[in-house]
Image: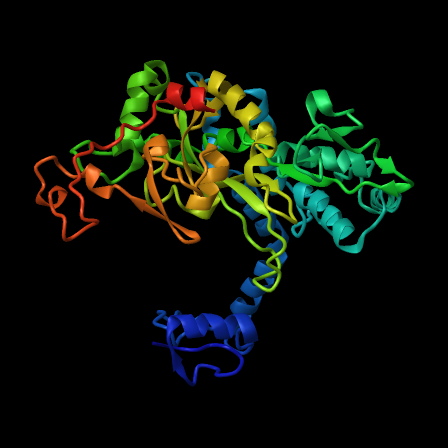
Amino acid sequence: MIQCPCKGYMNTVFKLRVGVRGNLLRKGFWDSYKVWDLHGEVLVRVETSNIAVSDEAEDNNIEEDNITEIIHDACGYTNMEDNNSNNSVDNEEPNIHTTKFYKLLEDAETELYPGCKKVSKLSFVVKPLHLKCLNHWSNKSMDALLSFFKEVLPEGSFVPNSFYEAKKVLCDLSLGYTKIDACRNDCILYWRDYADVQACLKYGKSIWKSEEHEGKKVAHKILRHFSIKPRLQRLYMASETAKKMRWHKEENIDDGVLRHPSDSVAWKSFDARHPTFSAELRNVRLGLASDGFQPYGNMSSNHSIWPVVLATYNLPPWDCMKNPYFMMTLLIPGPKYPDNDIDVYLQPMVEELKELWDGVETYDAHSKSNFLMRVAIMWTINDFPSYENLSGWSTKGKLACPCCHKDTQSTSLRSKLCYMGHRRFLPMDHPWRRSRTLFDGKVEMGVAPNPLTGDEALVQL
């Protein structure tokens, strides 16, 4: 229980942490409570004038702090001191991609012009672009505004010449995404070889002949694809994070206790099958998770959007499930869920993962060297209905069990299906196998079905 510092209670009522959080979100902090001394803090006596100066300095640095936070969100924690230490004789030079990113970090710390303390070179580019999005400015008006800034600000100020040039500055952050048009029936992406396709065929029947059918615009779905490669590379651009990416091999104790995915049978069997991959401990292991959600709340159950998220399992267990290390790679649009056609939308991610399996040059800030980073998906994480869409094995009907596959024992009970044969998984000498009274009046002498191998599953597919 702590005193609630919201505008309503003003430290007069004790509340639980959950209640305090709710009140602060609804009402905000008590404006007059500037020097905290009621929540266990050690109060240091400071002159009032110094407090005013520190508050003013904090306000002046808001923009710069926000820009640094954006960069940290893009690549995890990055320490500029580590980046500046790369100039040693024994260290390798960062590759082109890394050099561009470190240049952005320098721009976040560099004044817009000598003596400007409020705005850095990078924040000056980000802020107008943010205002353009919020106020729906046209590209032409943005160009005019930048031309005006160029005239007003002192010589030597970094001002882009146009909106296009400002966007190019932020390309190195890779915060954007690629829009890919998709058929409204989920049967094709207008992408790569099909970028110029004007017709869509499904079940042998033409849905439309062109983008303008009978004088009306045909509604497309738009898939958002967020590139994986730059975000994985940036995990190694920060010395602290690059060291954490080795945890699964250097600091995890292999004593038979399952405390990290690297202790699992799946991880070890993968290492045995791919020794060249496991030989480089900096190669990345990913888990893929996907499920639909209703963006407009439970009241709108007829619209669902499917994000596809990747989790990095090289990290320690207390970090691999934190937000900075989650990577959304696809945002599959609604209004209906993609069902079995989800493989159509997964194509951009699969192509990128194939490229990453072959390897991409990456700079390791911890060892100050470049290496060939390879990436593999270890497993997928989803609920049972989503498992049907991602694996191709139906989770409904008479053969719904993915473990028993074609040997699933099911019985119809009116309109429902009941799945039987669970005693097959017991040892042959177990007393329940011979019991007639506890079960269906039969003795169970069957054996547990063998799981499908990858080749067998491919033949069935």
